[in-house]
Image (cartoon, rainbow, N blue to C red; front, side, top):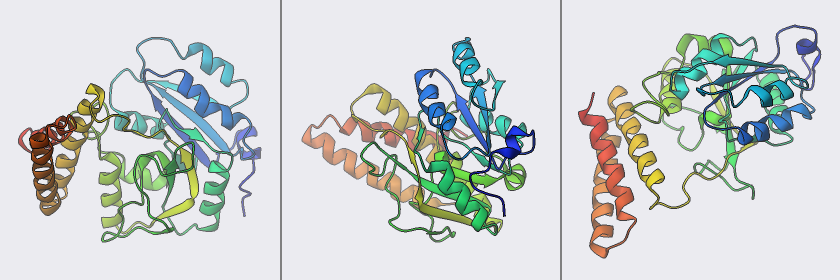
Length: 291
């Protein structure tokens, strides 16, 4: 069996176990924070592909420096869309499994080692998901399930986030991300949810492990910030698009009713946070009306 700490495949020019694919735009320091642990990570059987969506050359110097210690390739992509960038990076990948961390993630000391050990010990699965955590070790981005388990069509909530996905390259090539979803598009989220549903419907096996952890900052700091209002509006357009694509009409209706009632109650109380739910409601409606 292949060792989870092997590095000879990459160093000898062979195919690595993992391809770490990082789409990035408008970030420089965060890329350094993500790449730094890789250069001293005990797990070495990987390649790094940076999909650079910047119009400028801000990453020229940093990537040249990191390339002295890491197997890095850069793909320039001036078109927008995180899903498109991930698909582009995957097309040039050589690894048996693909890993797509966000460009503001950071790898913990055991992130790749734990994932690689699990993948090698469980070859019957097509996809592994872990969890994102903040500096304190608490769940970030979302609330995750308390225990590891296999994803099923009737039980997958709290068990996936795209920044922790390790997927067999041959399987990903069959499905790809739907490029109409995700950051940089009108439907600004839910590309991973759409992919998970398509994989499960096709009979692929997906697993969530609480032992695979990756740092990701908490997303919402202040609901009243203009950036948060824009984000929730864009994300909810994505949710509406997802629900219509997969005919999850009950889920969409339930969210619309909940947001409407909660937002009205807050507005009556005169709370600023009501603007957040108004932006969410408008996002849902926009996602339904604009096709």
